Length: 225
Image 1: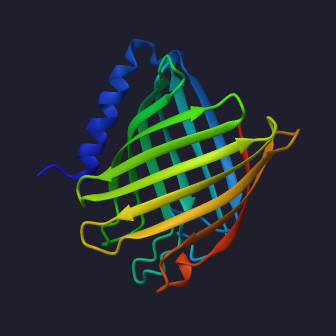
Image 2 (image 1 turned 120 degrees about the vertical axis):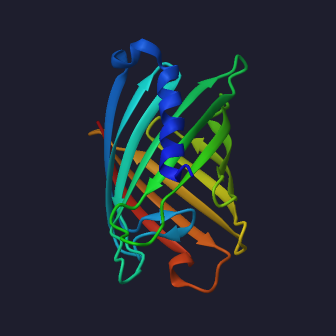
């Protein structure tokens, strides 16, 4: 039986092959962020506590790949999971009419989860369009083939200037085992003259059974290098 990690590795290897022999000629970048709460798809992944994250990205033509990590807190004793590490790769470009497209695979790993099997991977695809007026719209579908879960998200934004923009998202997480929910967010981002980005976002879901899914405002400070 092929493991989830093996299948994700094969997918990433296939994407890397598409980059060809010019792989070493691409561009590398890095990012780091500090946030008041690590919220993913409307639910806190850090038990409503601050989180620090960072990652590295590689791009060459339409090919990209990267890794990203953050502290987490699932209150899952005795496993006491404290780390998430993601690995991803894909292809992204735009059609002649200006519509952008993005397809890829991402693997979510929790290396210190002990006996808990939290790891999973998703295949995703998205489309987007930026209007001359500063309005942007997008949509993305992520599919977890092992667990048969699907996440669908739509977004819309507006750029007042090159430095300041606002956006809103609406997502629905559908689980094969049940427990579907919807989440939404509204946020703003400001890029300071010194290259530091400041973000403020309001999150909420239609889940009422747990505090980590309740409405919240999250502040993030980040830097790309």
